[in-house]
Length: 69
Image (cartoon, rainbow, N blue to C red):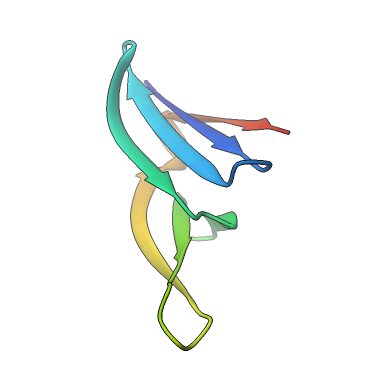
């Protein structure tokens, strides 16, 4: 089972599996819940255009998402 920790204050995401960090990302304004059955981590780009790009997807079926403020 994966644990996805999304901190809305620091805008970071950390995914762990059995206390081992398998994914970490900063500049994350949102984590989308997609109808296709996964969480999609969106990262804000730092280029001239202000846009958000998906950088990772985790299956909802075996991922617990926690939201910290």
